[in-house]
Length: 217
Image 1 (tube, rainbow, N blue to C red):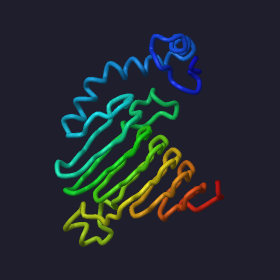
Image 2: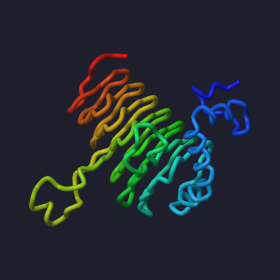
Image 3: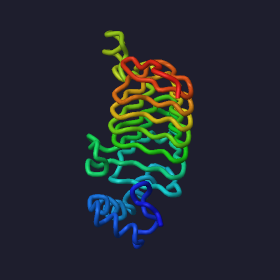
Image 4: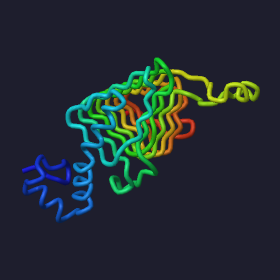
């Protein structure tokens, strides 16, 4: 029998599902809300031209801001948590997935999970498989606004951009900021509250502002 403490029940009518509902009724409410929102969630992605993937679970509706001439692809087993009740860390707002310019690419692999926060691609953000992003984290490949005052007056949203790559099996803690032009290597962990301004090698723990390698895993 599936242990609901380590994995969600395979069936809502199973013994473990009933026990979970008795022990943790808020999870039962989350699942009911997810099922009720499913038609609207599927419509939301269809309207922006993103095919619904296998095994997707959305707790609350994310915000999708897709430029019509950009690319947004998402693999199987997606899990997005966009309501305060869906995670005890209490996301501040829905997950936002944004591609802001023609030719921008946001590519997310299989088994991706995220609670609140944003992923913003003006150029390119590539996320591998089995990546987990903690509550209220921001991943953005752009500065949004120019640093030079005159340029900021003339072209206020023409900030510098550089691609981001997050490789397989990365775990990013809550309330992190992942800035433009960096790569986080496979299997690495980013500590909560970190600001990542430079590349992180594979298989390490990095944390701080700016983030630096604490130790190897």
